[in-house]
Length: 409
Image (spheres, rainbow, N blue to C red):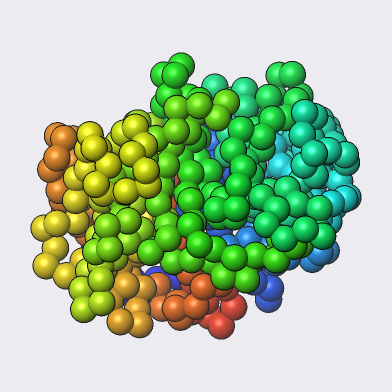
C-alpha cells in the first residue's frame, strides 16, 4: 500500500486520506461494484491482480484474486492460484469464498465450483459441470465474471452461455446452485439474457432472500459460440427481479419509454428491497440521473410505465447531474458515485434519504480520480459495508490500480 496525498486537492474535505492498494507493474483492479466481496465487519475484501475494471482474461496465468486485510495495513495475500478462476462471492458470514474455475468451451469442457476459507485453507471442489445440466440439454460455457450469493448463504447464481457452439440462436441463462444439495437448475434462459448482472437481494427476509435483480438486453447479438457481436445500449435494456426458482417475474420502473434509458448499472440499496439505477436521457438531454425504485408485476417490458412501479429520482436536486457508477453501504444510508462531466471522473459520497421519496443530500466531493475514460479503466466506486471507506480504480499512474479513500467526514 502506498499513501497518495497528491490525489487530495483543494476541493477535498479536510482529513481525507487516499491510498493506492496495488503497486505492481501489472494492471490490477477492484472487482465490480455490486460484487459480494466484503466480510460483513468491513475488515477483509477481495480484489484482483492482472485484471481490468470489467474482469480478467480466463487464460491469463498471472491473474489472482487477493484478500486485502484492512486492519493490517491493507496487506494483500493471494487466495486463488488456478488459471481460469472467476466470479467470487464471499459468504454472508465472511468465513469462506465461493468461486468458479472456467475450463469450458461452447458445448464442452468443465466448470468447477470451489469453496475456500478466507485464509486460503480448506479448499474444496464441490461440483463439476462437465456434461449437460441435469434436466436440460444445456452445457454451460462463457461464465459471467460475477456470481451472487443469497443472504442466507444457501444459493449461488451465475450467468453462462448455454449453446453448443454450432447453432445460432442458442440461449444465455442463469444457473442457480443449491449449496446444501450441491445441485444446479436453470430458472431463466433466452436470447436476451447475455448480460444478466445478477444480484441477490441482501435482505434477511425469507422471501426477499430468493429475489435476484437481473438485466435484460433486448436486441443484442452474438454468434453460435456465444461471442457477443452487438450489446444493445439503453434503448434495449430493462431491469427485472425474479425469484431464484424462475417464478414471480417483475419489472423495475426505469427506462424503456423512449426518453429515459438505463445505463446498465444497478444495485440493491443496501440490505433493503429497493434498488437504484443510473439513467440517461434522449439526444440533447445529457443528464445522468440516479433513480431508486421497487419492483412491480411485469406489464410487458414497459419500464418506467410499469403500473404500480414506485420510483424516486434521487439526483433531482442537481441541475445537471452526471452520475454513472455507484455503490451503497449495507444500511443503504450512503452512496459513493463517480460524477463524469466531460472527460473527468470525480468521486462523491452522498447521503441517501431515510424518508421515502426524498432526494439524496449532503453530496461531498472527494477527489478527481485522474483516470482516463476508457471501459477497462472505469473508476467503479463502491463503499465498505460500514460506509467508512470508498474504493475505486484509476490508471492515473499509467497502469490501472486499485485505490481506497477514507476519513472524509
